[in-house]
Image (cartoon, rainbow, N blue to C red; front, side, top):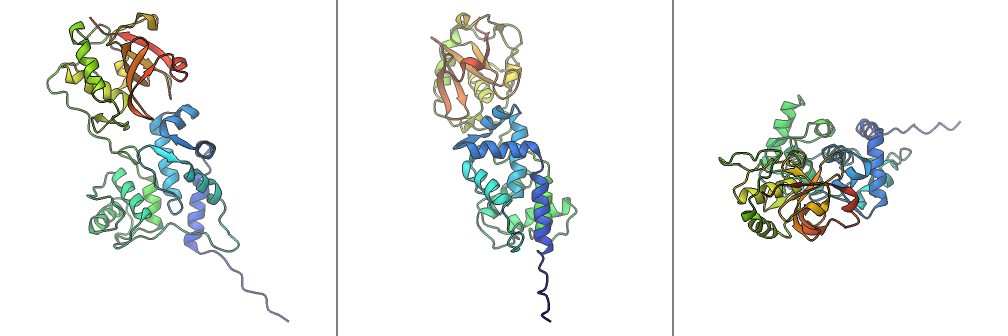
Length: 328
């Protein structure tokens, strides 16, 4: 009588990784995100947020969870750009582990001397969780080992300085101190300028040309979520910086800036120097710019940085929330 072949089973680490993976993919929002990524050539967090009717911070968090869960098969992304390849990997290989053959791979074990994309993502995740690493360059050095050990200590994981499955799982659940993959500088200092009052014009007519000249000086500056310096702007950070250059302190966020000035009944009432607002990824003012006249406005676009667009543009026209008359 021929004896039966011994039963084969995947190892405990692989089983745990798969369990974590399926748990991650059990969230409907993450499945929707994956479907959007698979359908488009290139998407930004802004686009995904707009498509799902959610805030950008919520989307950034979900992308962070997805990326950490599939770190061994994902591609690096820079800034806020999400490449289609990641979606293909998520869909094509996220479920297609060969359980029968036992070929599913667990999250990589990393230690001093390791290098490559997995190390870079580890370093970004540690920075994202608030741990300082001087050079996030994909090389697991002593500085990275120190940060790992500190994270393990704070997470009540055995302190080894080696990144195993338990460390990856803790990183995935760690609260983010800044948007995933984005260096967000501290808010621009207001010096001693008093904050401009709400509900009334704040820009002297004599300064309109200077405001517009200053705004145009940063044409082409890249978009950076949370950016408020010439290294990179988001829409409201750009406005705040430009106005501060002219000695006028305005709030930091678009919804607070929307409280400035007097509401115009139509775009025809706008004059150069006024502010324009748009309703994009969430209800209310979520994007803003400076009106230049002749239907044009300048703003920090998420796709192409600081640029000039028109209110009649097919994208901006249906999203135009209104203008605020701030010139006095």
